[in-house]
Image (tube, rainbow, N blue to C red; front, side):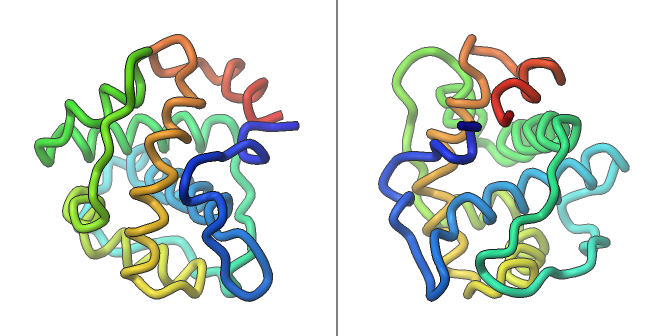
Length: 158
């Protein structure tokens, strides 16, 4: 069983007709951030990936996408004044919570819009689900209190 089969926390039960939205939403976020982070794009750059339809669709995500997405997520949080929150998720201590409206502030409207297009979910629901599942997901992706290597990511999502 891979990491994304084990996403747990309050958001795990967040569903829409057809199933759980946490897993595809987190994968879509990390893939989107990876593509922007690796290409040097800013958070306000328009989404370049084509939208996916259906709330249960799951984009393909390679270990390098996830790793780049984690780096992009870390950078977004640090640049927007929430480095302490994401550092708590990466570190080995207690995970700090972050309200849905602050998730929207950190990621910016263009990323929320792109995730809404990819998943078919309303923007406000995306922020709520991400605020519930991101702390635990990042924590699971960084089990040793640091960003993992590509090999470690492949093993975690395997």
